[in-house]
Amino acid sequence: MSQKASAVKPAAQSGVRSHQPGQEVFKAILSEDIDWKPFPAFPPAIRLAVIVGQPSEPGPYTIRVKVPRGEKLMPHKHPEDRVYTVISGVSYIGLGDEFDANKLEAYPPGAVVVLPGNTPHFHWAKSGEYVTQVTAMGPLGLEYIEAKDDPRKKNA
Image (tube, rainbow, N blue to C red):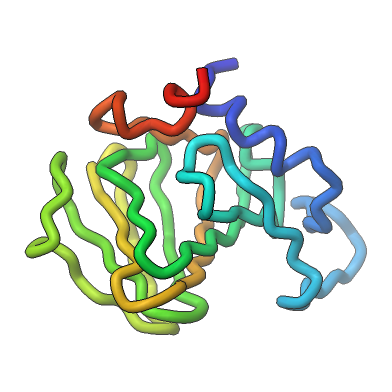
């Protein structure tokens, strides 16, 4: 298994109350029941919660990402196509290999952003904390454009 895919395992296997595809039991997940965890591929203040599926495995998954005010995710890409839905706050996303505040677009709650796989992009919680929900087909991968921006390399 690649390092990118294995980075998801701590959150996906830590008892997070997630629904599994094919599970034949109705299940509702309330916001207050979401179990936010650190994610090795993100800066330390950013949190991830697995909602549905196992992101480290092939198949559908849904995660939520909580980004505190001022935090940035430097340019990176994912091999999988992704659908982002802004749950709360304003998510600022820019496209490109370099962080450029002039390229940021603001997406308010309810906005849906479809990001094709391997599209370099970056995020900033410019105006306050935001939460996005990401749906995709696993395994989840995350590769920073510049190795120096990858928190996994800083902790190695």
